[in-house]
Image (cartoon, rainbow, N blue to C red; front, top):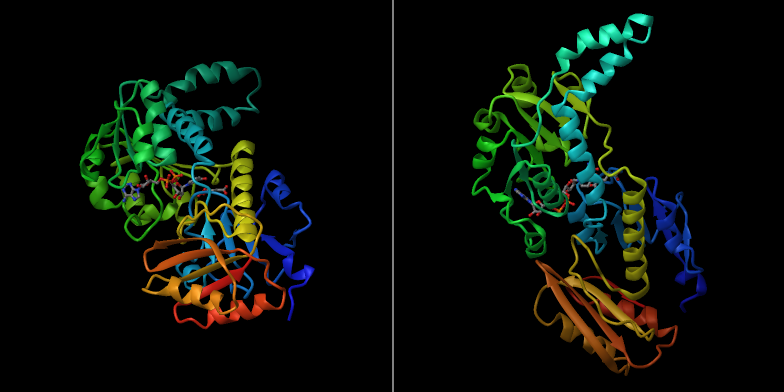
Length: 399
Ligand SMILES: NC(=O)c1ccc[n+]([C@@H]2O[C@H](COP(=O)([O-])OP(=O)(O)OC[C@H]3O[C@@H](n4cnc5c(N)ncnc54)[C@H](O)[C@@H]3O)[C@@H](O)[C@H]2O)c1
Ligand SMILES: O=C(O)CC[C@@H](O)C(=O)O
């Protein structure tokens, strides 16, 4: 069986509204966008829940145009050799602006005040008088001089922390896994909380910017609320499940928590007292949607065309300059002698190796081997099959 032109055309499916500037990256003869495809080569997604989806046998990559990947079954993807990308930092500025906007607007009771003023529309000439009489119910608090606790000092948290300092807030941050890059960007005036409890106890406002994982799920619970200052305002632009909803409802009811601003409204949340529900707008700016879409699309395109991997959450990041000659890419178990067995299979076809790279990530590794000579069409499927026979190989492609 020889490789036909049709085999070279890659199908991209999108599961959410992806900015056109990102999709333009695929406007080349080797790609088609087909949102009805049952068996695409790659999927570009935003928040669509993919946990119940069966993957076709051609699927090689999923790109999350955004940060959080909790809507993607990452472990299953790894087992099936499907690389999962996200777009680190691409929407961070949008979320930062939304957090600071909500922080100030909530502290000044702006949302309630605006809603109340709109309700006066039938009061005719009385409106100015009613406004002056009624405004006392919306007296707010300035954020200057107050303490903001920032949990998670990654792309978003670091921007929020730095800008809150510029707004004359005191800022305390907690992130036991902070990356070196972020630490360099963080103002040294951000105080370091040694424990989460310390941050809870010292903050007037708390904003959370961590991924949803088994460790972070439900981190806002009754124990946490009992340590916090009475009337603390909590902002959650990360994920709804970080908060134990039953405990939050009680804490809002009894005033332990003064206000809960969340980007993740649901049936339970909307019944809570002193809630500010935002319809998942944190990353919804034209700039952010374009940044994410372009970054996601470029990463997918590069992977499909060259095998190179950047910003994956489950595969190692790997780069080998692409010469356009034949390349073998294999994703396999991180066990001894995998590279030896792959090179042996290649040399069985009398092919000469020009360059190679191997990187591991946990239990898996990724190897790319460049071949010096052009490989005839018929040899490609045969070589792929030979490599697939090696125990520990998850997927392989000859590019
Ligand atoms: N509302 C939105 O539209 C929107 C947009 C972007 C991101 N998000 C959410 O925000 C999250 C953060 O995004 P980001 O771009 O800043 O990600 P990021 O990966 O740059 O930063 C996450 C930070 O959290 C830290 N962290 C992990 N576990 C922690 C823990 N237990 N305690 C304290 N810190 C911890 C990490 O060390 C990292 O520095 C995403 O995972 C996503 O769920 C929401
Ligand atoms: O796509 C969006 O609008 C939200 C993205 C956001 O939740 C993220 O995790 O990046």
